[in-house]
Length: 419
Image (cartoon, rainbow, N blue to C red; front, side, top):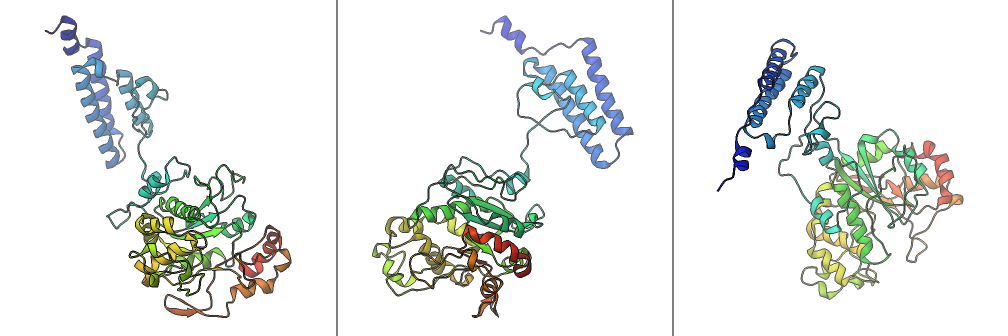
């Protein structure tokens, strides 16, 4: 049985004569504007669309008053906004009054720029969710926007960036060609001025311990966050003690025009190489496929997606690569050797001095920094291959530099390094 109140609720609303006249007047105003004031075909089409929507809304109003959220006042505000040339957007809010505080409709729509160039690095994604999201690849090859390839500079640091002023000088003036990502210890806040290129560039981080898989986890975390920006094409892993030894133009050209990635990957038959291999990795990884290399890599977007998408081989390193086996020295070199060897140059772009031996490279302090010292790093005595051609430019970065090296490096950067 349907009671009387339900019957009244479902009956079409009977508008007063005055309300009908207001609706008709507003529609006539929109039609007049369309005929007289529209400056272009695009504007005419937009207004015509609004007229259609207005008619649709009028029909909804007449059929069910309790479902209506657009009043006559809203309708007049819509017309007024069009006359003033304001942008009209949509809103998912169910409150009509909250949408009309500024006499226009306020809608929150997805913007492609937010999708392909995320400005906010802070998020609540777990590592699993982040890797899944970053592994997504569009099937349409062409980009629906003007894409300028960027280089993602990924800093893996325990805390502050003592050489930050040198990097700021290096980046100055080339904002559209790079992105910066910083992984620190959890809870650490990188204190920089709002106008610094490092401002707001920290990613959600986790604890990292030297020598175990958490270091490789941090590398994948940096890489995945950088892959969220579709303009990033090349990816460089750096530490707080790294410096650039060429200017930005040279580095950018070298990386974006390369047909190879730069990951050191070699077969070391000693106990420091094959001696770290665990037989439990067979048959997925055989000992003749096992490789070693510096953790400071440079890769392109395609290989970056492959690396963060891999679970099968990475789990083997998580289970069986423990000190004296170090995942950051073996996982990526081995993985690329097995699946993508033709695309890798098998060398690193970061110069490191291991001449003193031991588990850590030489650290350079203020007294070491001279013009001749920097020139020796830049002018490599041994040649290397770049796009299958011989070159003497084999390194673009160097480490390991102490905080005390900053001042002399700034003094030499313009004369020696070109920035």
